[in-house]
Image (cartoon, rainbow, N blue to C red; front, side):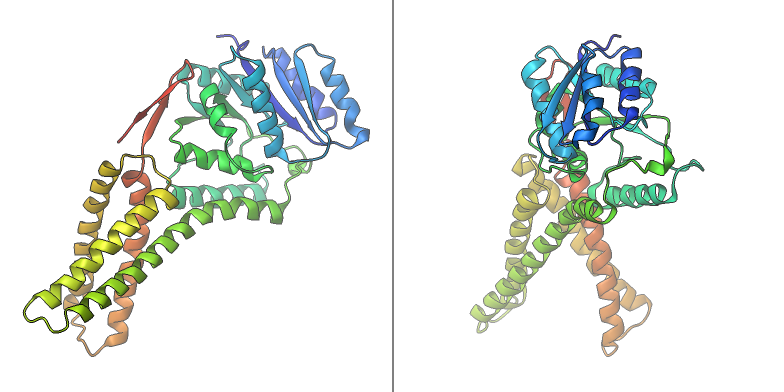
Length: 374
């Protein structure tokens, strides 16, 4: 399989001679279209771009000022879509010579074979990996798995092979700096873009000292995007709880003179009905931003909510009975109730994300796509 219909996207800021080695390696391994973006580099570094642009296979794009890696990637993506109508996709590469051209080729060919986004993933358990990088990746991978429902072994990889249809999607993703690469991964989930992984060599040159990643500022940009997903879910739950209490109190007041079982049951059922429908709507539109048909998602939602309510009652009352905790031991009963509620709250978040509001979409090799609902 040849690589003529795949473009390499190479953003660069204040490069050194490693950039030229990267380009030479790509050309040697069969790539014939390289989109190089100068993201506002200093004048003393511009000669590296001039040398690179002397290759006929290299197209050089410029940002007059530094706009960030995300902005550089989107500039190249848009140029590809406008100027390479026959191109089936792109592959993003870093300019610090930490991606071996053989790995770049393997990722590109796997994308071409499967039609999926392919992530080139390193092995962070190797002894030469800097401790900061190993710990950072493990934490981020765990956060992605728990809060986003995504199993990605290298969340920081810059080596990504992207089919044309996904390139169009990623042009609409927000972010201009390093957080954009995290947003791309989150978009895989939100937009149901299929993806896979290819193991690549784990190369660190001088413990990655040439990176422009700013540890505190850029880490905050990345993590706030991931945590915002969970915070929206929390806000939705709190809002629904307030409405639940309000409706319960209102119906209880309206029915205060009614006799029989109605004033006992109706406020509870009415409050749960109103608050659950509100919670469903907020989760679908604001939290998970799901495009699953409303009827299907609603059926799944209540298929989860009803057993969850019964499980809540079984666990709390069951533990009270097993441990023989009487009504007078208010603190212990409240503690058990809280633990059960938090556990079910986290479990519900993950199930809603992975099943209730989740869908699959297959990108075809001709660039079109279609939805597949689980």
